[in-house]
Amino acid sequence: MLNNTKGTILGIGVDVVDVPRMKEVLEKQGDHFFKKIFSDMEVAYCKTRKRPYIHFAARFAAKEAVAKAMRTGWSGAFRWKDIEVVNDDSGAPHILLCGEVAKALEKCNVHLSLSHTDTTVVAFVIIEGK
Image 1: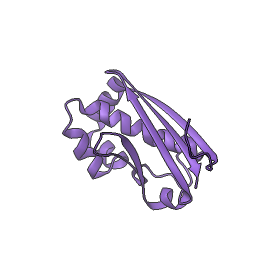
Image 2 (image 1 turned 45 degrees about the horizontal axis):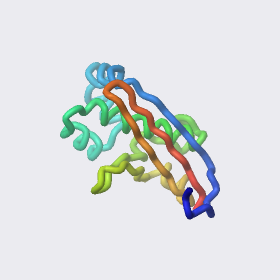
Image 3 (image 1 turned 60 degrees about the vertical axis):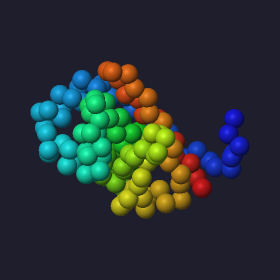
Image 4 (image 1 turned 135 degrees about the vertical axis):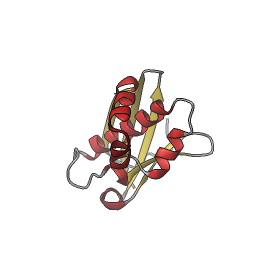
């Protein structure tokens, strides 16, 4: 059980991505898709990994899960590149926000959990009031 129970859950979001489908999309759409969805830092990170498509799928799923937790879909404050997935020194994923999404969630903490197999990625996001 978590010690900090002060925060109120304002939104939850989950997304599941099929890794082979992500690989197919990335191969077909290439740079256009990369530039629309991922930050330069995310692209650089994923391309250095042994299985980059799993990492791209995880970042895509995380962004979708944030959009669902915000309850805006792809409209309103949501912008793909305003959400960046980074890993800390231990490898744990975290969400960095900028732009309109950061403004919309400035009074919130955003929590992320990712899990994957070779073929499937799941992202779970909780938006909590500060």
